[in-house]
Length: 314
Image 1 (cartoon, rainbow, N blue to C red):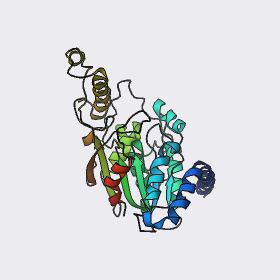
Image 2: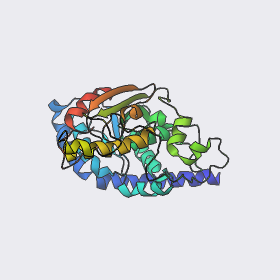
Image 3: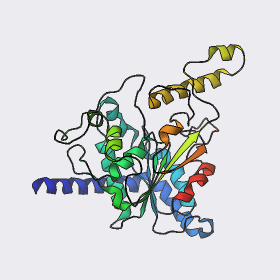
Image 4: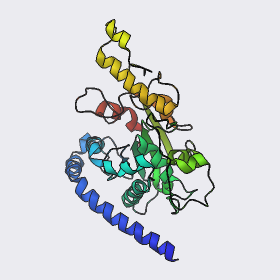
């Protein structure tokens, strides 16, 4: 009982902290929301029960998704919130740390957004935020010694944007196995014990949760990845240095995700097949993985691309 009480106290404190962060971090979005609510003729979404929670991707913070939140609000989804991740929240995971601090923020935000209502939250999750959302929804296995989050009951739909659901995690710089406390007695494979993504796919494969609509959006570009930098192509003037560099950089990420193949298509970071999820509505769009201030290329949150997946919210 004391352990249960401690968990409840910790959760309440986390919820209070997130409310404060939301009030501070989404101030500009809230002003946009007020304007949009008054401009009802610009509304696309008409289901007042839909409450969108945006889950930032790997090494990204909430501020990177303000434009996406604003675009969804302008389309009529007035209740749109970004989980208050900070880029630094991801740093411990690079050295084998667990994802519990991120999951706790997602948990507090989603529960606060849903209130006491079930099946009202639509998770719009980018990059690693997609598989992290799948782990948060699950109720089978404990994580870092705490009870499963079991968030699926609040969720109507999960829309993942360029999420590496089946990544091999074969990073060129190597990968430090996770050390998650409190799981010694939990039944799972060695792979799942050392990787939260592997744990997610082992415990909650594919579109696992009944009652949740899964939509996996995969981006494609007009070139495949490359195993090496194409010096010959540049010398023969078949391609520019910038083109050869883009193909090579994409190939590094594609090979890390597939485990062995750099010459595949994807969004520049995540291959199409890795972003697909069995049992989900799988759709393809032409865009890059992330937004860049120096690029004219669309990403998943660009207005024209949003319009290709937004119909799956309702």
